[in-house]
Image (cartoon, rainbow, N blue to C red; front, side, top):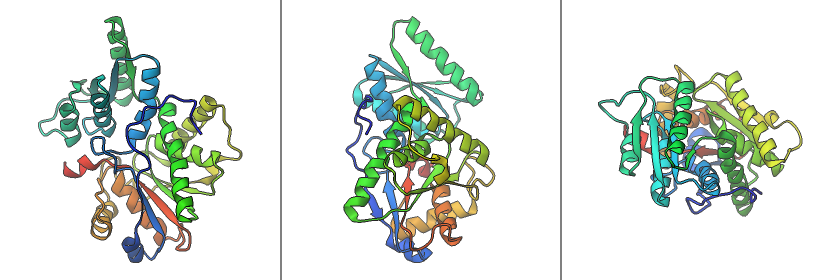
Length: 319
């Protein structure tokens, strides 16, 4: 479906699609499934690996010899960029917002372990962090390097457009008439990619985006912007309103990004107890709590199969 775009394999697809009968019995929904994107061998895996396959594919197409990425010390994207660079023998510069804390996050420790060069920018907001990252790329280019800045949301979303096809093929093999997809609602890259891929395949999936970071209007705008970019980049225009199949769930935002809710803490205990899943609290546990809430409200009826994406973030569970 996306063979025209450069792609550097970083894991052996597909990731597992697992039935969750024990939590299903607990929640009174017999057909719950989880797509295990936490089960990738690259530095404990996670959803950013799929985006990195296309970001690094584009970097290699351009002949780049270095990756630059910016984020917080807890960033999964920084950890996995450093890991991919180490695996492929490419230099990596990681720019962190803030000052180096006394107690560093497990993701930061893994990033350093992978050999990346790290630099703390001091207290900066998201916009300034991006500006400083672009400045670093300019400085490296002037010094004779060929850096690639990780993070273009549209190119990154190609990873989950491809994942939609992968998941569809798995459901066909199982004779599973999947109806509901539950995803974390955040920057829009994973969400838009999966929605776009499903639209291209004309799948009848309803998407439940459990916001972990933004209010509904901003989350919807971010997803819409990436969808528009995907249509332009691929010159493909799925029929109908792609956002018409999207339901935004606000019940787990709580006090904001990175702050657990009582339901997310309970979800981590329940899915650990019943399905041996490890759920970190920033993205994953809130999303799984959103799944349980949607089932309880019958937004996801018990006779309609549902699949939740486990996006990884495993190191944070040990922070």
